[in-house]
Length: 287
Image (cartoon, rainbow, N blue to C red; front, side, top):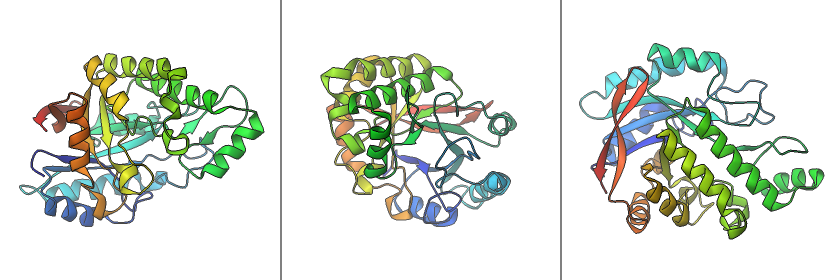
């Protein structure tokens, strides 16, 4: 897999199955140029369901072990360290004091921003990355239609991009996991297009994620072919990544990702070349 990296990787620090060393070995064996650890950032009491988030008291050890892995693999595999931030309107963003401090200190190379939660105009905050039954229960209790939930999702993606402080947009249309193709129907295509424009305007990199395929939850990338075409038209950069929660998936279905990006008009994808003053340095590599 020369010319490819895997920067969306979870370990036992959050909801991953393997440790950092096992993930590094898998990335090296797969021929990747770099791996990037991106544990779900601590959320404390900010969010109602934080089973996948790293504990705040583990942050210091996370940074230490990530940097130690980089030293062990020097000359064989580049090791980057980041976090995946949950964005929920009014409750969670990229401005958490401890994350900002870590970023300013140079301890983190990048931040992924992802929308796992819906904050509707009425009803309770709820996750879209859990069971379909629980999500539908929350929707029924609040009297929300699929269209309203999808529009709230796309609004959150746009808001997250405009907020700033992140470098990568994770699994951009994750909501389709429960709604199929509906969240990109003609009824709310404009909402997705607004999010694309915000992402491109902010200069963010979009993850072309194979995670849903790897876990048997989706049959296509996040984002979908239609959104990939919009991103290409807007001039947004994309990076191939796996949202890997186990070593076996660290480069899972990268061939499918390459085909999808080529079909959308992309000829290259972004890989991280390093970091400077708290911002990642990207370079384009042919697909």
